[in-house]
Length: 358
Figure (cartoon, rainbow, N blue to C red):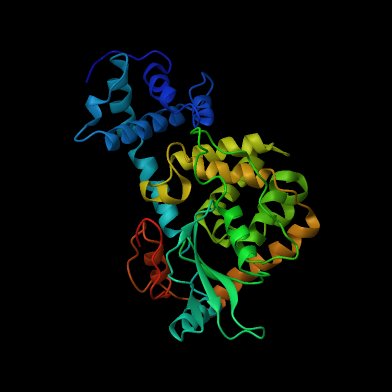
């Protein structure tokens, strides 16, 4: 290891220059008044990314314009290990207190009984919220076959979304859920659009949770009391749970934190997310999770919309606890596998093929 002490941000700034479209929050972590632990974590994460892109590259071979790059990387690697291990345990056990509800078990039964039929295949599409979606139809509704969506979140929580007017309406709804997931043609993030809130359209847990988060961001003082009823595991995806945790951390230090303050706290949290979460939060710098946050902060919200949603979200957790008060995972879940997480909660989804593997 070299004894060269790096100048402020020399290696990190060099590497960040390759990711300018994603690095706004990361550059804030290099400021002189930034938390030193953020700088160390950023160095490690960038080093991991470099290693992943280069065959057999080790931490002491990280490229940089000065020897400081090697020093900074090695120093950060050792000093961040415990923090990352603790963060991973938080992610792994966040939903231990939320076993499968009777509604989820009923849904799995519908699939097994062929009452919920896949449209062509159950090959899933990914959404901006760390959820995968599969096209299906309910064969025996009062008006004949009806379009539905099967959803599986990155926490392994499943739901069927109904209420679509027709098949094109479902396609529009799904396109809204995907907006921001991929860069635009020029490689930069696409324009920020609010999450669709069609009052006459389908409803689901995700939409209810988004109404709550949008209100928390829009009016923190008014939301402080009602939000005390919720915990992170009340949100059905890690992506939304992390936004809630970031908001809760920000409001602990300020009476009315701005969306920018909450966003920075979220960026710090996503920087510490486990490697297997990259499918739902994105790399580099958790850009999918931050893009989702930006869309939520641009979404109109009111207490009138959010309060019934808070009641619904809190009730879902109560139902799960009462249904299986001492339930434990029946199988060890592969944390990268959406289906593995669902199976650990006692749910089997026959024929489902999520994007990017099981």
